[in-house]
Length: 300
Image (cartoon, helix red, strand yellow):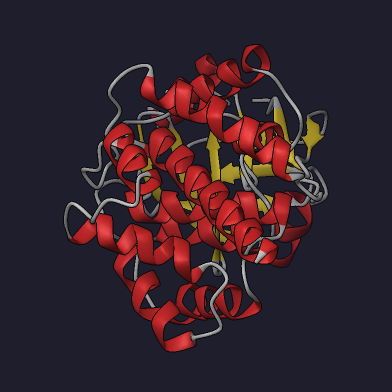
């Protein structure tokens, strides 16, 4: 079967690790482990992934009916095909379209940040939205902007995360990050999704301290604090690589825009997964609040 598209670096990575196995199979696709990295085979329903090979819905259905966890997978560089064990199924990249979704950094003027935060808040407050960690987004935002006391432990940790963005205190940063890494349910836990959203705003607007980036990378690379798939997303995010839906939303949130352009981009992301989309957007909100805090401190 012919892949519809693939992230442009995947053939190079596959050439370095030509033998692997099926890591996991679920309704929307499969994750394949080659060496020490994972890539995804599935539809582009939730956007094009930074480690994705995308198939049509029909081809994916056929593939998922024939493969199982731990099945052998082989990359044939001469034919640019992925061979799935003895099933006879193969995915070819030979005539497929490579893609890449760069997220460009830029200064964010205070007036643009103010307007975009206002628009983001109006979208998030239009209907009740709760994160995978049980935070009602509207209640949190209202309390935070009014400097009201935290409603509980998770609320307190979220505020500490915002404060840690520009911190040089590695011990304090580590304590906050350990709370979020791997916290929540699913293939990508909610705490990880918050951090991916935060990292997307960092890539677009340069908000994190060097210490924050360094501690987060060390925890993700060295320790097993989250799921394999959550770890993969975080590693790509630390390198500035994100799903197409995240790139479009983070770009819009850090440049001059209007509600008619912003709302459909955020709605597309919010609708992803059980709570993964809103968890990622919430992380973006935290990033923008951290940028607001940084700009306010620079005025003093």
